[in-house]
Image 1 (spheres, helix red, strand yellow):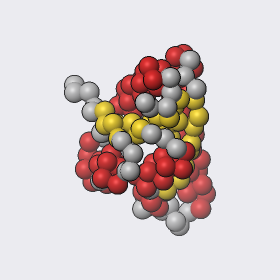
Image 2: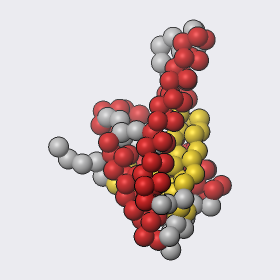
Image 3: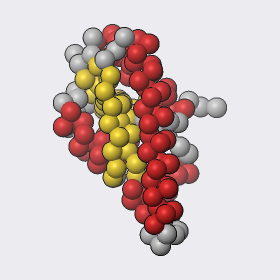
Image 4: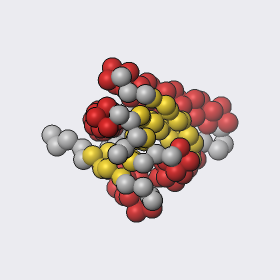
Length: 149
């Protein structure tokens, strides 16, 4: 049923749990995984000094891309351990828009993402990526809740 499963990751504990679930679904359905990490360039642009100091902005972007590579590699390791075919995308832009756009472009038939990423306060202040994806996606979306402490 689900042959191409796209999983969004940000390296958080919730996204690791989300990736585990997505890889398990892909293994059971004989499908593949596409991991996506999106550098939120709009959030970066609002940081103090981001536009005024080009060296700072390029360094921040470099760090965010590196963080994306690490988050993606965690999902890749999970997929390899389970024998699930794997592909990845690192994108720049608005996370919800990029996830929706890339899922359609890749032919994914299921999106899997965590409800809470980095921090609860950050998501409240910036808006919830998962909520935006659920509202606008044309393909099914599976939301994995954060583990309660």
